[in-house]
Amino acid sequence: MSKTNKIRWTYKISSLLLLAFILFFISPSFIHADTSMQGYKEVFQDYPILPFFNNEEHTNKEDNQGQHQRLEDVRVVPGGQSIGVQLETKGVLVVGHHQVKMSEGVKSPGEAAKINIGDTIVEINGQKINHMTDIKPIVDHSGKENKKMQIKLKRGDKYIETNLQPIFDKKENAYKIGLYIRDTAAGIGTMTFYEPETGKYGALGHVISDMDTKKPIDIKQGSIIHSSVTAIEKGDNGLPGEKQASFQTQEKRIGNITKNTDYGIFGVLEKEVNHEKYDETFPVALSHEVKEGPAKILTVVDGEKIEEFDIEIISSVPQKSASTKGMVIQITDPRLLELTGGIVQGMSGSPIIQNDKVIGAVTHVFVNDPTSGYGVHIEWMLEDADIIQSDLNEAAA
Image (cartoon, rainbow, N blue to C red):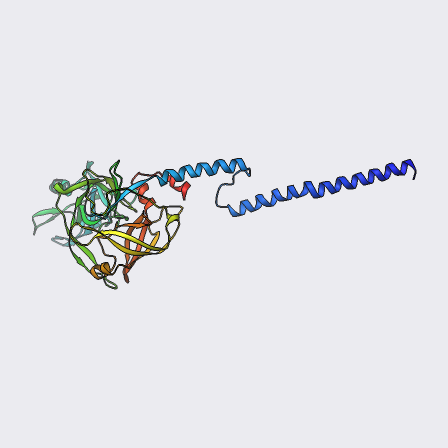
């Protein structure tokens, strides 16, 4: 073979070897990186895409573990106490219309002024309205002067202004506006938890709504009070039962109420609360930690004695955002079923404990099956109690 042919064959063989090297050693690396990133995007498409490097992944894992640890460090004392609840509304709540007798018939001035049930009267003639007693002197003065009242209403998140002319009711010898109004609300429920260091507490697990308007009460202030269960009306299919309880006023006050939210009432304790079952703190479980299976609730069925009863977690939804109905629960304790028929009104807020952790609170009963109902996960109550921050909770969910 000539020298020229040898050079030519050497060049060809070298080219083939180089091509083989590229195909078998370099190309697979690019292909692997591409498919791995594509799979990464598909699997984690609901989350921010992070740089595909081991050191960055390690750093983010450490950050999340730190946030988990902070949440896991939260410890509360489970409640179970029966409490009386007293609320004062911001302004005066309109709960109904009534007809005022006139010489030419009947009329509701409030209805004619397009004041709706569920509206809150916050000002009249520029004067702030805090109590029902604030209204009568203004009505009498406007009636005698034959002047319309300038009324400022809160309707949902909006403020509305309207004019109302009082009418003189000869039978009652007084000026009337044709509205039923209320400035307070009261009821009973159950405390869910409190934090010993700060005194912050949560109770009920659901919003307090007005009994007539069925709308959430916008509170000015409120109190929680020691309560004693005196009797229980047993629940049945189609008819929810209820606890009957007595409570006194200020001398039995144990804390204030600063919030009335979808997840309960919240405030700060002013006195120590007694707990026959537990006086130590418990860790909490977030929604993804709750398991289907046995659990317990704490509640009062007689006097002020807190008792423990068996339940079953039928289902639990891991939640990334706040929701009021995260669990379906069923009462399985024979004694509680015998006493109450299941879940009754006044049991709202009873803490749910599973694996020695507080996981939530009883909130609703199924009307057609009083043995079962809903529970709320504890994390949303902890947020509204200002014990944990929502951004930390979202990171851990």
